Length: 182
Ligand SMILES: [Zn+2]
Image 1 (cartoon, rainbow, N blue to C red):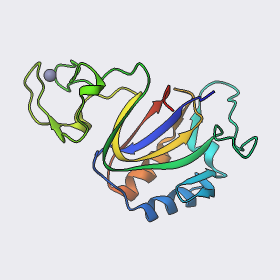
Image 2: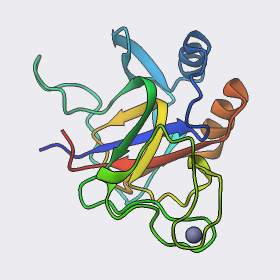
Image 3: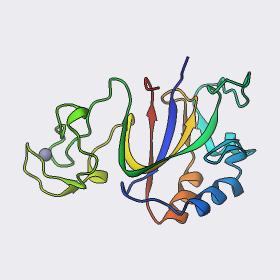
Image 4: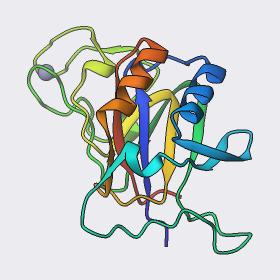
């Protein structure tokens, strides 16, 4: 069964970090370990220190059981040319920063390339996508760090990991959980 993923991304929706710097940073702090392919890695030796796991005995598999096992905990970069919206099953759309009403009726109507929104409820203009109120089950970006095989709420990044990401990209970062997606 697919548990889901934890995703980290720059708050600026169009920000593509320098990937060499980003990858080198993740490696040097021990978050990522051996490469699986060009854009995915086994977890590094500091991985369990850079996430806080909820619950007393998390069942995290850090190695595949077999060659075709992709459902173990590992890390990959998910990249897109234009801002990509990712949302979980049963996720509800983000809300206006002023009146807290959903900006669209359903995610299908959400334009992740819009750049900014004027609220149809309270008429607050020009809210950038990153200024909207996002829940922890959706996000939009061109670059996501995906940590596979994490249940929603099972783990969250420690401050020092987010600070490192912010330092090397000059942007704030946030995280959310993706589940019910293949
Ligand atoms: Zn509004």
